[in-house]
Length: 526
Image (cartoon, rainbow, N blue to C red; front, side, top):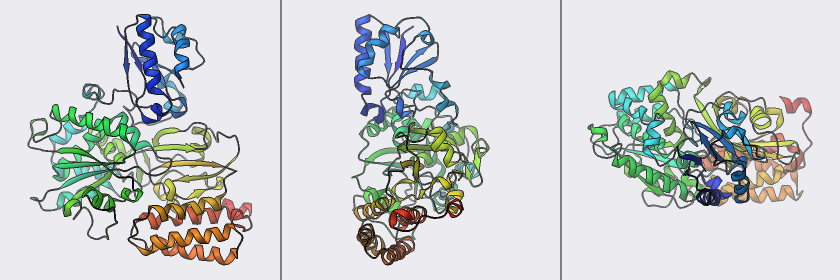
C-alpha cells in the first residue's frame, strides 16, 4: 500500500516553508525508492507546529513538527518511509497521533471537522467525509423548512454583528418571487489576528460552496458571489478549483443534482479596503463602484446587490449551515450557552505560546483561552491586555478573564466577540499607543462618507498625541471621551461606531498609561 504523507498547503504553513518541505520529502522518497503519495491538506490549526508533516499508517496519522527542509534527512533515517509502525519512530519532532494531541482533543470541531483531514480540492475526499449530506437533505425538503431549520439552530452571524441568520434568510425568502436574488459571502477577512475564514477556504472550500448552495435553495437565489480579500491568493486558487469540480459533478449549475434548483457561483477579488468588510460597502465594490457605506434602510435583504434581495453572510456563518442541515438544528443548538448557540472557531494570536485555530462551544472563559489553551505569553512576561474582535475590539485586562466567550457576556463588559480573533499583549504594551492606533487605523481606513468617522478619527489621533505628550491631559482626555461618544452613536457603520471600544477600554482599564492614577484592586475586579 502506498504511503500517504500530508503536508499543508495552508498559507500559514507555506509561509514557513511547507512547499519546500513537500518538495524535499518527494525528492527523498524518490531517492529511497519509496512509493509515496504527498497530499497537500489544509492546516490542523496548531500554527506553532507548522509545517506539520503527518505520516499515515493503517488510517492513523502521526505528526512531526515544525519540520524544516534540514529535518527531512533525519526523518528518513528515523524510518518514516519504512513499513514499521510510525509510533516506534523516535524523533525530536514527533508529536504522536495528531488526533490525540491535547490541543485537538479539547476542541469541538463542527465547522472545521474536515480541515486538515482531507485533500481540499478533492470532491471525492469531501464526500467520503460526509460532505454534501446537508445539501442532500436541503434538496429533499421545502425552502421554508430549510430557513426554519437554520432559525431553530440559533446560528448568528459569525462575522462580528451576531445577527440571527435565520431572520436574514426569512426576509429574503419572503420577498416576491420573480426578482433575481443573490447570496453574497463576505470573505473580506481584514481584522488583525483573524484567519479562520482563510483556513476554511484553503482547507475545506467545498464546505463554503455547499453552505452557499443551501442558502440559495432556501431563499430562491440562483447566483452567488464570494467577495474574497485580495491578500488571499491561495484561497482563490482552492475555491476556483473546488467550484469547477462541483460544477462538473452537478453540485452547481442549472439543475443541481438533477433537480429544478439552479445555483451559479463565482469568486470576486476585493481591492484591499478594510471598510469593504462592511456589507453595504462590499456591495458597492462588488458592483464595480468605490467602497462607500450605504445608509440603511433599505436593508440588503430588500435591496442589496444591484438593488435586488440579497443574503450577505460571513464565511463561517455559511460554513456552519451544512452541519445544521445534515445533523439537525437541535444537534447544533445543543452546544453553547444563552443566545450564543453552536461552536465558534476562535483564533488565538499575538504574544502567545500556542497560537492557532481553536473551535469550541460558546461558554469557555477568556482566561482559559489565554492561559490554558494558549499557554500564556511567548515572551514569558505577564499578560497585560487581550483584544478580542479585531482592531475595533475592546482591550480586556486580567480582571475580566472570567468572562464567558459569548455575545451577551462580552457586551455586558463593553466588549465585542466580533470575528473571534484573540490577540494577546504582555506588560510591555503601552495602552495609550494602542488607543492612538485605533484612531489612526480608523482615519486611514474610513471611506470618508460620514463626518463622525472621517473627522472624529483624525481629531482623536491628534488629541491622543497631546495626551501622550503630557499636554493638558485631563482636558484632552475629556475631548477623547466626547469624540468617542459622537463616533459611537453618529457613524454610519461599525468602522466609526466601534472605534471607541478599543479607545475607551484602554482608558478605562489602563488609566496609568494615560497619566491617570491606576484603579484600586477592588475597582479593577468589579
